[in-house]
Image (cartoon, rainbow, N blue to C red; front, side, top):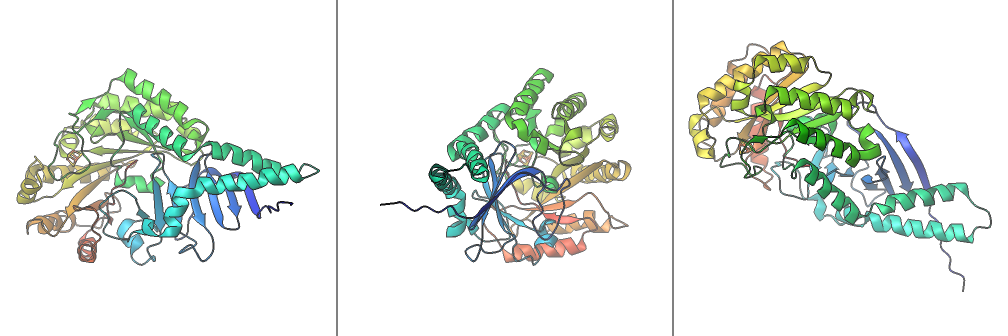
Amino acid sequence: MNRRISLPKYILTPQKKGNTVYTKMSYPVHCGRYSVLETDHHVFHFNLNNEIIRAKAKGDVWGHPHEWLKRTAGNDWVFYSTGGYTGVFEATGEYYLPNFRYPTNSVLGGHPFRLQEIHSLADNWHQILLELLGKVEFTLSAETQCNCTHKKLHDFLTKATANTPHNLEKKARLLFDIIGGRISVLPPDARHVDYNLIPLTIAQGCLYKCRFCKVKNAALFAEKDQSEIRSQISSLKNHYGADLKNYNSLFLGEHDALLASAGLITFSLEEAYREFNFSNSYPEGSNVFLFGSVTSLLEAPEQLFQDLENLPPLIYINIGLESADQETLDKIGKPISAHQVQQAFDRIQDINNRYNSIEITANFLMDDTLPKNHYPKIIELIRDEQTFTKPKGTIYFSPLTFGKPSRARLFEFNRLKILSKFPTYLYIIQRL
Ligand code: SF4
């Protein structure tokens, strides 16, 4: 009996040239060079190492054609939902709503990974590709003359399927080993590059070990030395391989890189910029993201900001202020004073006003259980003390509780956003 296996229709576009700038649009615009495989039922994207980076299904089974699954360098699948578009951009500054499989502090969205079509694609993409590869092999073996297009698909699928889920997980763990541990939280400003960044740990731990914080680790603050940083950069270059070209952004880890000595910060940026060849990256421009604290911001020498301003990348520093109310700071176990928060807020404004390529952003907590003066004190800072509307110095509100989407908290956020004289968005905690 003859087996009949028919090859489905497909279009393979190797190394497609995507956008060269990260653009905020109401439909998906992908930045970078990537290969696209489109079949009757699916669209898959692969990076320059032939590792899967995005996937979606086609047709009625898929909720909305603008929705995607994205796989991160930490090997998490993130579902980008449109959130119906209503209010998503106003709340997040982006036209999509990221949904994770791990607990986070989002106040928007549902549980898309419970939907069969979504979790099944995230879990079975490799099997789908293997089945396609089997059909191509069968077709090629049955052909009397070699079909070049089928052969190209065969070669591509052979390379792509070699990057199995197991190997991709191993590769993510290797990344964490290189940088000294998984990054439990990325700065909210990383949304400007869709969280596509290379992590470089220049200091571990943080000073405060705040009681409320769910992303901290036990490490006491300690900076790395120059040779450790050089060695990390060299391993990272190797790790990202051919796909390095798709990166123009750096995350200086970990929780308070601004507390590292000024010389180490500029050394790390210069080394990374040169070694990662950011001046020739496929996406235009370059960016650096890092966290700072009230203490590190107040102690940072002015010369550091002058030096950073003279480097090519745009620099985004995110400071966790959490509250300007002493009772709230005490309640959440953040060991700083309201006076220090005021000083830090003033310095943020001063630096944002004077430096073009540096933006310092700030986070405040949101929760209905916080003391009654929490919001009024924030409003004093972000509205009453400001004469004009500010174009930079984004204020992020970070919901305190994890895994509890809440309409009431979204309502509270909208009220604060309307009052604020700064760009104001929700901070949805995302790891690498
Ligand atoms: S909020 Fe920042 S400083 Fe406080 S414990 Fe968490 S990581 Fe450390």
